[in-house]
Length: 67
Image (cartoon, rainbow, N blue to C red; front, side, top):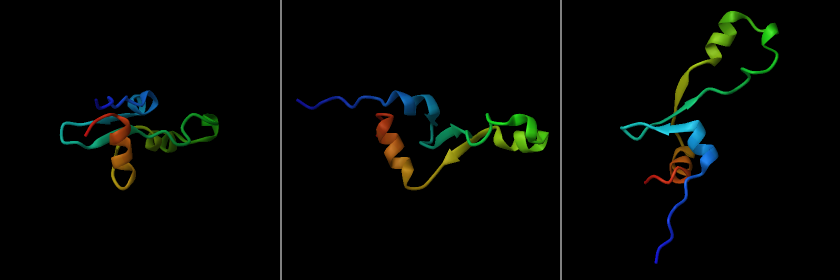
């Protein structure tokens, strides 16, 4: 009997698999710390979603329990 693949919950909260199997995630870097010293434009650039490509993509899809 083959074991079920469990979803890694921390990864599931941060990444979403689109219909065309692209990985979307929120930009997280440097946006919640010392905001008073940053300009409005600098904070706006940190917002939004981005698509993940490259070598880490396969690992994350595996952690999400998708194939």
